[in-house]
Image (cartoon, rainbow, N blue to C red; front, side, top):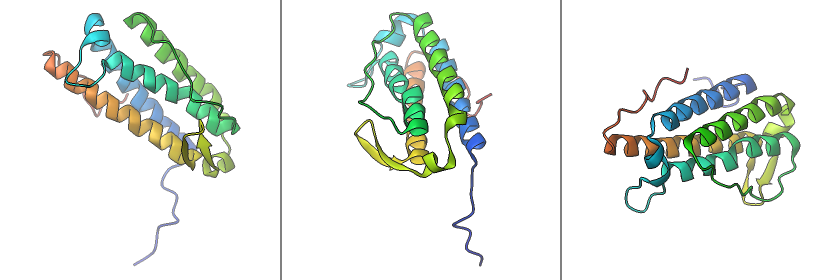
Length: 160
């Protein structure tokens, strides 16, 4: 049996493609939410989906910018956009910042272990992976909300 533990599984472009595919799918989930429920609907102690999206915006471009530069600062504080159109606009702007900064991330920056926002200690790659997994987690909560509202969510496997 050959030991393939040191074989690279993904390159930077593939990681970006995965991240952007997840963002496209999350955007579609935001789009199908009725505006009022986007900001108010909750189940149990879970937050409204718009609040979850706000968290993802706090992690999105700021995480990629921190990985690229090594300049983390404090955890970003954002105001929640007031409407669905504004939330989608913030999402699109955040995605464009990610696209613009991504080419600046060197191989060394992906490997560098730092404390992101003074909170999370991991490599740049693992910080970005955490960001993607956190988005998937909250998108899944959005799927539960949509189903509870009687709305069919977008196909979870379609990231085009």
